[in-house]
Each structure stands twice: as C-alpha cells, then as structure tokens.
Image 1 (tube, rainbow, N blue to C red):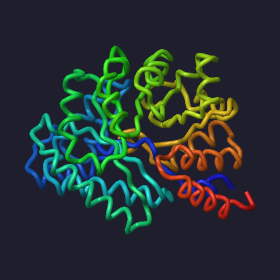
Image 2 (cartoon, rainbow, N blue to C red):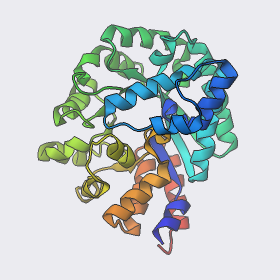
Image 3 (cartoon, rainbow, N blue to C red):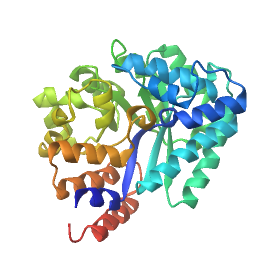
Image 4 (cartoon, one colour):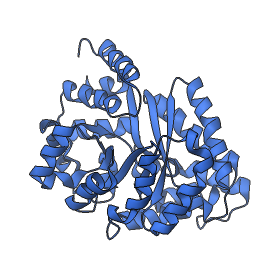
Length: 334
C-alpha cells in the first residue's frame, strides 16, 4: 500500500531551491530563447552532466545552469514548472528557497525575480497550493554581501516570509552571518539555515544559539550528538531532511543508512523534502518512496512525516490543523 499511500498523502515541501528545479529540458529551452550558449550538445548531454560526487561539484554545475535565467519570464516559467510537478505529488504548501545574490551578480534585477515570484504565487493559489518565499544568503560570500542583500530586500519585505542560509557549508560557519540574522529576527522574519549536512554538529548549535533559527535545514549530523538530539526533540525544532540529496552528494553511503527513521524514533520533528530535485533525481514523492523502501518504513511513519511537514510549516495553527485533518481523511484505513 505504501506507494499509493505516498501518492495520496497531502504534503508540504519546506526545503526546495527554485534554481535546483531546473530540468535539462527547460534549461535547453531557456538557453535557446535567450541566445545563451551552453557547453552541452543537447538535453541528453546536460542530463549526463548532472553527475557529481560532493556538494562543491554539484554547486559548480548548479551555478553554471543559472546562466539561462535572464528575464522575469524565465523565473516565472521555472517556478510554475516546479509548482505543476509538486502538485502532481499532492504538495499543498511550499516554502520556496531562492538565491538572489547568484542572480544579482549576473546583472539580473531583483525586481524582475520578485515580480516573477509574485505572479507565481497567484498561479500557485489557482492550483490550490499556498506558496511562501524564503530568499537565502550564500554562505560562501562575505557577511558584508549578506548585509547588502538584506538591504536590497527591504522594498520586498512584505513578500517574503523568512531568510535562509545555503551554499557551501564547510568553512563557512553560521556565526559568520550573525549580524544579518539579528536584523531579520528584529524585523519579524522567520529564520532557517542549512546546518549539519556536511558541517559538524557545532554548526547546528551555532544555527540555534547564534542565529536563533526556527528550523534546521538538513541536520543529519545532529544525530552524532546525543545532547543536541535531546534539545531538538524537547524544543521540537524542525529538521527539513532531503534523502536523495544526501545520497547524491555522498552525505550518506546508501539510503539504507539514512537517519530519517532514527530521527522519528528519537521524537524529532523531521520532514521529507526534495532539495534540488532536477539534479538529485527525485521530487518529494520519490524521496518518500526511497526511504520507505530502503528502511521499510510503515504506513504510520509515512503519515507522521506528512503531518510533520505541516507542523513545521510557517503557517498559522488553523491552516496546520486543516491540512492534518486532510491527511486523516485520506488515511483513515491506513
């Protein structure tokens, strides 16, 4: 029953990067539309290039792929392509990451990106999906760059829900961005950060204690520290876990060694997400099914993961209850 159950479960996706949803077919089409020369002969060659062994190798390909994103229409088309794919997986709520610094550095106007995402938010609503926007700080850039981005986002403050932290984790600890996160917190924004993917448990502590985040993105390596696990459990700090991403980037050796079941057993508020699905070979249902098959998760564990996705979302309690009730309605016999 599990595969059909996964398909039926309403879900929220809380850890997905807009730029990481760029499928080879759309990359090729946008390159042709914009007259961008790609170092690939065709779509098949692009897909073959989506083969990497670590986070930095992935990021090198990832940032190169952004070159085809030039206009407001490009960002809109990319976003609705993802939303259509998410809706097919019964995703009802999305909290979408995007990387403004990577585009501003290429001469793209922030206004074009934000207008595209505003239009896409309306499109999402028409498809019965709620969409929240979380611009992320690129941690391999300087703290001054992060502060400058935050200032540039001022006119769009009402359109964003929070601030995130992503990109190369190793050697770029959360503490580097204490200032900008303090400003965002004072402005009432939600705070999230990638921590404990490749970086050590100390990065998770820093994200909690220095940045004051509401949610940890990834957090796998928190499982190495029993005191940290207890804290995450007691405070019910959500973890947005991405199994196929972890496998593709060699964070884990095999899906059978993924910590998601141990997280659930420890009482953690863990969720399943797709991260950069075009590059990692699977959208949200693919991630659910991968861990279900590898770890023999039972139906109740899958249901709990779906409920956790709404519990961890930045939506009000009434909306959380409505979505959880919809899960109960479709899983009454599970």
